[in-house]
Image 1 (spheres, helix red, strand yellow):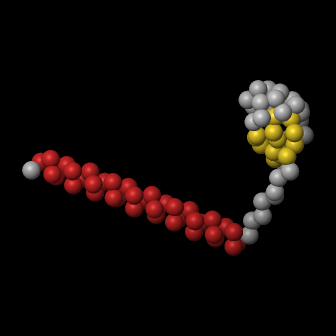
Image 2 (image 1 turned 180 degrees about the vertical axis):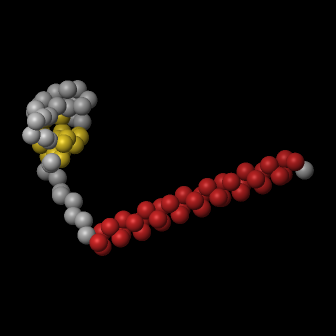
Image 3 (image 1 turned 90 degrees about the vertical axis):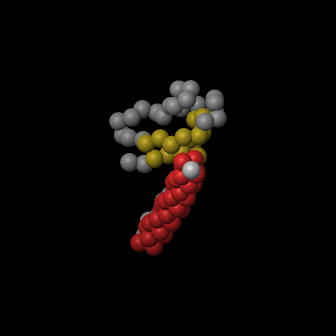
Length: 85
């Protein structure tokens, strides 16, 4: 089932559309126009290396979010303790 990228010539919105054999011609989800330009898109390539890099990137991002949350929680705790005294 191919996914194609389109740009609406009416409103300029760019979107992806899953094309099934049973589906009719695509329409713009924003303005319902059928005046669409099919865009050239790159295909995705997946290998063990790309999956490993994606996992590492996701873990690093999650770790950064955890550190920021811990920092904010610590600041709130310090402010609360300062208010008590």
